[in-house]
View 1: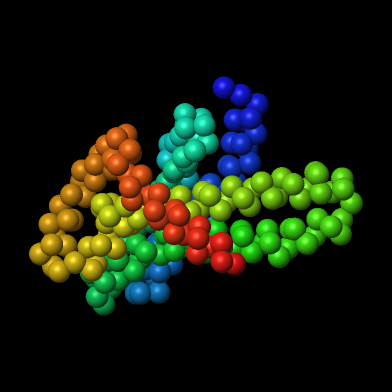
View 2: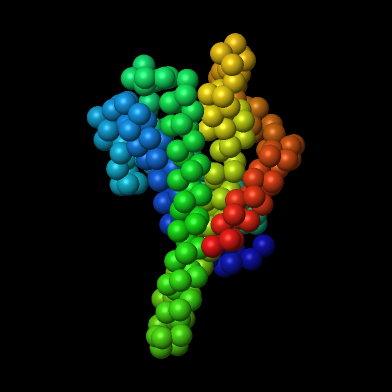
Length: 222
């Protein structure tokens, strides 16, 4: 194991991971706020200040451990969930699904923004600035933006696994008829155990990999 490589990659990935996770949670709260629920705003969670969202294990330790143990092939993390009160929604079932979709949607937008910055700002700039600036400034930025594309696409895809409490499960509950939605909701207390089993057995890849391919393909158009 190349320790120097791992340390470098962790440093390069740390900022994109933190941005991806924080924006993901803020997006949940922002969509909920626009749909009538002010809970996140009242509790000061509609802020990009990482300190308001960091979970010591989910935001810091878990991404680093996964990065190290998978040799950079898989990174996942989470922040403190943004509180949402569906009683404030006009249509709780639909609006809860829309609020859930806001998280993955924000990550795809961040990935797209990273690609646009790389293609239309950083690359053209590299031919206009001295070689020393390219090596010391632009190259690290390129590496962070590239990592940002991967991190955001993987985070969005993983969260779209259709099992509550992941976002995909909440979105699916919004589209299912009431009885089926209620039945799926009963999985939520055990949902993360189910997800961990799917990850450990590799079955999660059957959902995540096609979504990663789809999102990267769509983003690649730009």
